[in-house]
Length: 106
Image (tube, rainbow, N blue to C red; front, side, top):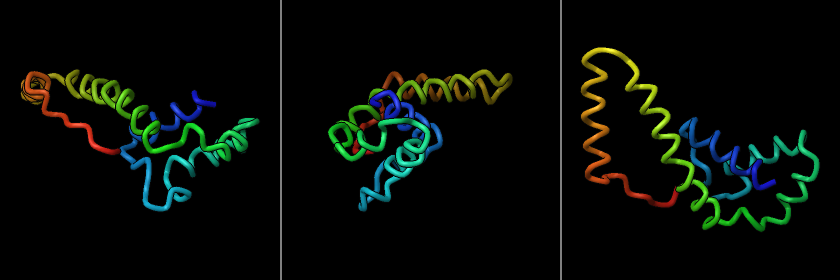
């Protein structure tokens, strides 16, 4: 079930959607997991347990997943030929060198 949670987090981050909102039951992550529970046996019970759905755990998973998503998207952009590609490569190098990315609660 944890793999289902991880793939759901990957999907939401890739789409640029927030994982959580103030009303936890209305969060994108919970709603997506509820939808997936219709097709995955045992997921509904796992969701009710809430053991791995804490803010800290979700944030930690997102922090591990997000850099790969950023690299994948960046690579897709950098594969474009021409001046845009050159400028984007410079920007990405600058970001990497300066470690500009700050991790806050997602």
